[in-house]
Amino acid sequence: MLDKILRFFIAAIMAFAGGALMQLASPVLTRFISTEILKMDMGIFKMTLATLVCVLIGAILGVVVGILIAPYFITKLKRFSAWVEGQLNKMPIHDVIAGAVGLVIGLILAALLGSAFSHLPIVGNYIPIVFSIVFGYLGIVITMRKREDFVALFDFIPRLIRDIAKLRERQAEESAAVERQTAASQPEQNLPAAVIQQDKGYKLLDTSVIIDGRIADIIQTGFLEGTLLIPVFVLEELQHIADSSDVLKRTRGRRGLDILQKIRTESRMKVEVTNQDFEDITEVDSKLVRLGQLVGGKIITNDYNLNKVSQLRGVSVLNINELANAVKPVVIPGETMQVTIVKDGKEQGQGVAYLDDGTMIVIEGGKRYLNSTIDVEVTSALQTAAGRMIFARPRK
Image (cartoon, rainbow, N blue to C red; front, side, top):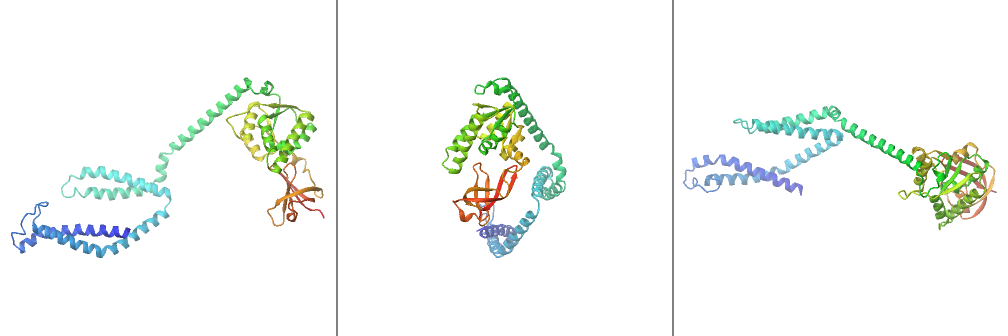
């Protein structure tokens, strides 16, 4: 389709060129053929019959020549466009943009200067064309070579944007600080008055650390001081997990509720439950961080992501896994335990089981015992800040 369009335009251009050239030859025709008919005015653009005949003959010859030479020009044009495309692909995008901007600037200058010189006799009509070529080329070359200098001229714009962004962040931090001070000085409707006092050393429990269960033993040792603060939205999440249709989740949820009841009844620390909730926040972890900021307490968790987010938002964190790292793992090589293998492992022949607190146990050669309860012997244990993993093998 593109070849047909190009062939049509080439033929049309050659037709116009042929007609224009043959129009110049019309006086020669009337000189050799002195006939009144040829000199008759046809009433079309004040043309005589001789001129009209010459134009038509020239146009027909031009069309014929255009059709004949069209394949050659189309081939050359395709090669030229492919070369231009290849050169543009080799150039960095910032050079292409700089060249385009320079071309536009050069053409604007050429148009302004060309209009001033266009009234000169003889050469006035050609000066705008020359100016467009010269200034367009200069605009491309200069902007590409001086690109960094031009960028430096407008470098104040991104700096200004960054300064405005920093100013807004500073204002937001100041507003948040004022909001915390106001919240600390005015008791919330749903928050007990004791919660507002920030000198009570509140420790906030999240869902994962309650299900983990080790927090109950840590509290019994007396290592923690202050008051345990259990938000109502954490209780709701535990209840939702305990009501899950998934057996593993339901077991973990019920274990968390049992651990929580044990903490409330046997704990040496004072335990408070707050009804404070944040309707504008959907995530439980985000609500916990917000509450920690409000009461100035510390969050007890073994969730690695919550640990990092809390620290970034200025809330202190007590990580149970980091404490476990300090006092060694809870299992040692050679210890035996009874587990239920629930799925395949990543490696061939491996099986995976879980403790009640969610700790993963990888059993070598345990795939053949899938969905079975067997005794395993611990071979090693890996403890990190993100959690712990136990490696074992079936007991012979």
